[in-house]
Length: 256
Image (cartoon, rainbow, N blue to C red; front, side, top):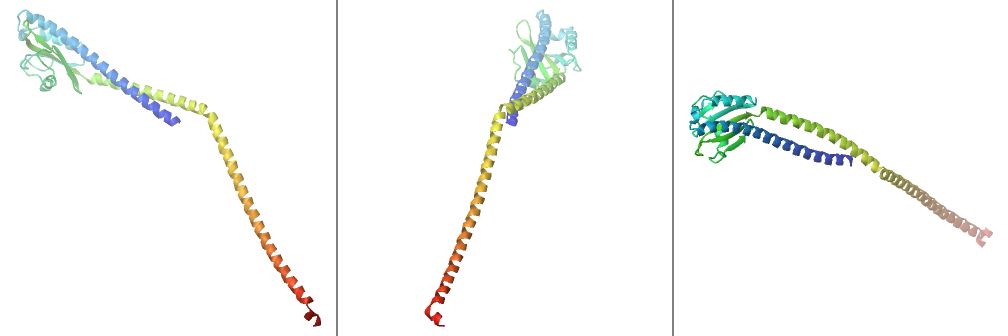
């Protein structure tokens, strides 16, 4: 019963561990994407103010400074790029040069969700988050987009640390719960265990007495058989003696 109760507790605690793990992972994902969205929104606001004044997107000389300042705000940001509707990079914080093309993998991630009416979008893979925002001119026409790529190494390390802590806490709770369950079952069924032991002892006594009775009955049966046989032999001997005596008393025998 203790093992069964421990297995049930292990299943319950395992489900709680999974729920807490996924809940924390989702919360951390939402927080990360929200922070990236705020950075993108600030960049979009600054660049849109300049384009609304009539400047072309590729003419904004202060854009490089804005992108580098935004990248310094979080060490996990790998790259921030500003590109036009054709995918040509206008400004970037990394090794990308002006006139280059956006990484095809990034475009593939954004293709299903990037639409002209989508101001903000986000996607993620096993290696990075990708968050973007669309830039519009004063006529509400898309003129370019901002893409921010975020490294997931720090995110994954935090999730692994939390998972390890959850395993530790769950193991400790399971050990304590199993100990309490064992003590509770032992104390709660102590009287029943004593009653069962008494029943077993009484049953063993009854079986022993039945065995003794059977042995005594067997001995009595053998004694009765012996006596019957002895009586038969005695009767036979008596008959023989009577016949001898009768023959001795006969008249013919007297003359002789």
